[in-house]
Length: 183
Image (cartoon, rainbow, N blue to C red; front, side, top):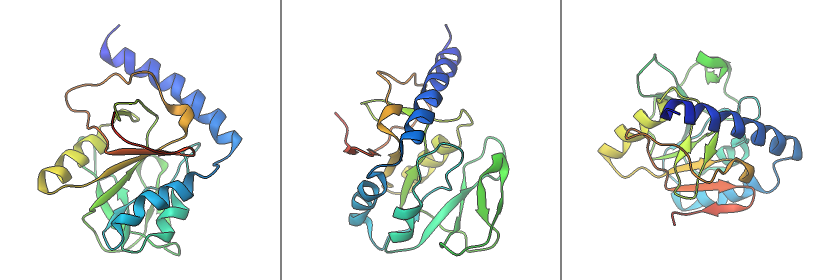
Protein backbone atom coordinates (compact mmCIF):
# COMPACT_ATOMS: atom_id res chain seq x y z
CA UNK A 1 0.00 0.00 0.00
CA UNK A 2 1.32 3.48 -0.85
CA UNK A 3 1.46 6.35 1.63
CA UNK A 4 -1.51 7.97 -0.14
CA UNK A 5 -3.51 4.73 0.13
CA UNK A 6 -2.53 4.51 3.82
CA UNK A 7 -3.81 8.05 4.35
CA UNK A 8 -7.05 7.36 2.48
CA UNK A 9 -7.74 4.26 4.61
CA UNK A 10 -6.92 6.16 7.81
CA UNK A 11 -9.23 9.02 6.78
CA UNK A 12 -12.11 6.63 6.15
CA UNK A 13 -11.77 5.02 9.60
CA UNK A 14 -11.32 8.40 11.31
CA UNK A 15 -14.37 9.94 9.62
CA UNK A 16 -16.51 7.08 10.94
CA UNK A 17 -15.10 7.48 14.46
CA UNK A 18 -15.62 11.26 14.34
CA UNK A 19 -19.22 10.86 13.20
CA UNK A 20 -19.99 8.53 16.11
CA UNK A 21 -18.25 10.84 18.60
CA UNK A 22 -20.11 13.87 17.22
CA UNK A 23 -23.42 12.07 17.73
CA UNK A 24 -22.44 11.40 21.36
CA UNK A 25 -21.90 15.13 22.05
CA UNK A 26 -19.09 17.60 22.64
CA UNK A 27 -18.66 16.97 26.37
CA UNK A 28 -16.24 19.37 28.05
CA UNK A 29 -14.24 19.93 24.85
CA UNK A 30 -14.83 23.69 24.57
CA UNK A 31 -13.91 24.24 28.23
CA UNK A 32 -10.66 22.28 27.79
CA UNK A 33 -9.84 24.27 24.66
CA UNK A 34 -10.54 27.60 26.39
CA UNK A 35 -8.23 26.55 29.25
CA UNK A 36 -5.48 25.61 26.77
CA UNK A 37 -5.85 29.02 25.09
CA UNK A 38 -5.83 31.04 28.33
CA UNK A 39 -2.02 31.45 28.40
CA UNK A 40 -2.27 33.01 24.93
CA UNK A 41 -4.60 35.87 25.94
CA UNK A 42 -3.95 38.99 23.88
CA UNK A 43 -2.42 37.06 20.98
CA UNK A 44 -4.04 36.74 17.56
CA UNK A 45 -5.87 33.40 17.55
CA UNK A 46 -6.77 31.53 14.37
CA UNK A 47 -9.73 29.21 14.82
CA UNK A 48 -11.99 27.59 12.26
CA UNK A 49 -15.65 27.36 11.36
CA UNK A 50 -16.74 23.77 12.03
CA UNK A 51 -18.16 21.79 9.14
CA UNK A 52 -20.21 18.60 9.20
CA UNK A 53 -19.07 16.51 12.19
CA UNK A 54 -16.02 18.56 13.21
CA UNK A 55 -15.72 19.36 16.90
CA UNK A 56 -16.90 22.93 17.58
CA UNK A 57 -14.27 25.49 18.66
CA UNK A 58 -16.63 28.50 18.48
CA UNK A 59 -17.32 28.83 22.24
CA UNK A 60 -13.57 28.90 22.99
CA UNK A 61 -12.94 31.30 20.10
CA UNK A 62 -15.67 33.66 21.36
CA UNK A 63 -14.17 33.56 24.88
CA UNK A 64 -10.62 34.34 23.70
CA UNK A 65 -9.22 37.60 25.05
CA UNK A 66 -7.68 38.94 21.89
CA UNK A 67 -8.27 39.15 18.14
CA UNK A 68 -9.66 36.02 16.46
CA UNK A 69 -9.49 35.08 12.80
CA UNK A 70 -10.54 32.17 10.60
CA UNK A 71 -8.89 30.66 7.51
CA UNK A 72 -9.64 31.64 3.95
CA UNK A 73 -8.49 29.41 1.11
CA UNK A 74 -6.86 31.56 -1.58
CA UNK A 75 -6.24 28.76 -4.05
CA UNK A 76 -4.76 25.30 -4.49
CA UNK A 77 -1.23 24.67 -3.19
CA UNK A 78 -1.18 27.95 -1.25
CA UNK A 79 -0.99 28.72 2.45
CA UNK A 80 -4.15 29.90 4.15
CA UNK A 81 -4.87 33.58 4.79
CA UNK A 82 -6.81 34.62 7.90
CA UNK A 83 -9.64 37.13 8.13
CA UNK A 84 -10.79 38.64 11.43
CA UNK A 85 -13.86 36.98 12.96
CA UNK A 86 -16.24 38.00 15.72
CA UNK A 87 -19.34 36.12 16.90
CA UNK A 88 -21.54 38.63 15.04
CA UNK A 89 -19.58 38.66 11.77
CA UNK A 90 -21.57 38.22 8.56
CA UNK A 91 -20.41 34.91 7.11
CA UNK A 92 -20.48 33.73 3.49
CA UNK A 93 -19.58 30.37 1.92
CA UNK A 94 -15.93 29.97 1.01
CA UNK A 95 -14.10 27.21 -0.82
CA UNK A 96 -14.96 23.65 0.23
CA UNK A 97 -18.10 24.94 2.00
CA UNK A 98 -16.36 26.54 4.97
CA UNK A 99 -17.90 29.81 6.10
CA UNK A 100 -15.68 32.88 5.97
CA UNK A 101 -16.26 36.48 7.10
CA UNK A 102 -17.61 38.62 4.29
CA UNK A 103 -15.38 41.50 5.36
CA UNK A 104 -12.71 42.12 7.96
CA UNK A 105 -9.03 42.76 8.44
CA UNK A 106 -6.46 40.19 7.38
CA UNK A 107 -4.55 39.04 10.46
CA UNK A 108 -1.33 37.12 11.08
CA UNK A 109 -2.09 34.43 13.70
CA UNK A 110 0.16 33.86 16.69
CA UNK A 111 -1.72 30.73 17.87
CA UNK A 112 -3.63 28.32 15.62
CA UNK A 113 -6.48 25.91 16.44
CA UNK A 114 -6.19 23.19 13.82
CA UNK A 115 -9.09 20.97 12.70
CA UNK A 116 -8.24 17.41 11.83
CA UNK A 117 -9.58 14.07 10.73
CA UNK A 118 -7.26 11.94 12.89
CA UNK A 119 -4.23 12.26 15.18
CA UNK A 120 -1.76 10.06 17.00
CA UNK A 121 0.21 10.17 20.27
CA UNK A 122 3.15 11.76 18.45
CA UNK A 123 0.81 14.73 17.73
CA UNK A 124 0.79 14.26 14.00
CA UNK A 125 -2.52 14.97 12.32
CA UNK A 126 -4.30 13.69 9.31
CA UNK A 127 -6.21 16.42 7.49
CA UNK A 128 -8.42 16.39 4.44
CA UNK A 129 -5.51 15.98 2.03
CA UNK A 130 -5.10 19.48 0.57
CA UNK A 131 -1.98 20.36 2.59
CA UNK A 132 -3.33 23.81 3.46
CA UNK A 133 -2.55 23.63 7.18
CA UNK A 134 0.84 21.98 6.66
CA UNK A 135 1.94 24.77 4.29
CA UNK A 136 0.48 27.42 6.60
CA UNK A 137 2.06 26.08 9.80
CA UNK A 138 5.43 25.68 8.09
CA UNK A 139 5.34 29.33 6.99
CA UNK A 140 4.10 30.69 10.31
CA UNK A 141 6.67 28.74 12.34
CA UNK A 142 9.48 29.87 10.02
CA UNK A 143 8.72 33.47 11.06
CA UNK A 144 8.20 32.95 14.80
CA UNK A 145 7.09 30.33 17.33
CA UNK A 146 3.40 29.71 16.58
CA UNK A 147 1.69 27.13 18.80
CA UNK A 148 -0.53 24.79 16.78
CA UNK A 149 -3.30 23.19 18.85
CA UNK A 150 -5.24 20.35 17.28
CA UNK A 151 -8.88 20.07 18.33
CA UNK A 152 -10.66 16.74 17.98
CA UNK A 153 -12.73 14.06 19.63
CA UNK A 154 -10.68 11.48 21.55
CA UNK A 155 -12.19 8.80 19.26
CA UNK A 156 -10.24 10.30 16.34
CA UNK A 157 -6.93 9.03 17.73
CA UNK A 158 -5.21 6.38 15.65
CA UNK A 159 -2.28 4.19 16.73
CA UNK A 160 -0.17 5.92 14.07
CA UNK A 161 -1.01 8.53 11.46
CA UNK A 162 0.82 7.93 8.15
CA UNK A 163 3.07 10.94 7.60
CA UNK A 164 5.12 12.49 4.82
CA UNK A 165 8.10 14.88 5.10
CA UNK A 166 5.81 17.92 4.61
CA UNK A 167 3.44 16.99 7.47
CA UNK A 168 3.68 19.39 10.41
CA UNK A 169 3.57 18.11 13.99
CA UNK A 170 1.20 19.87 16.38
CA UNK A 171 2.21 21.27 19.76
CA UNK A 172 -0.86 19.98 21.59
CA UNK A 173 -4.12 18.15 20.93
CA UNK A 174 -7.23 19.03 22.93
CA UNK A 175 -10.14 16.59 23.15
CA UNK A 176 -13.23 16.31 25.34
CA UNK A 177 -10.93 14.42 27.76
CA UNK A 178 -8.47 17.30 28.08
CA UNK A 179 -5.12 18.31 26.57
CA UNK A 180 -2.53 15.91 25.14
CA UNK A 181 1.12 16.93 24.98
CA UNK A 182 4.00 15.29 23.10
CA UNK A 183 5.27 11.99 24.47
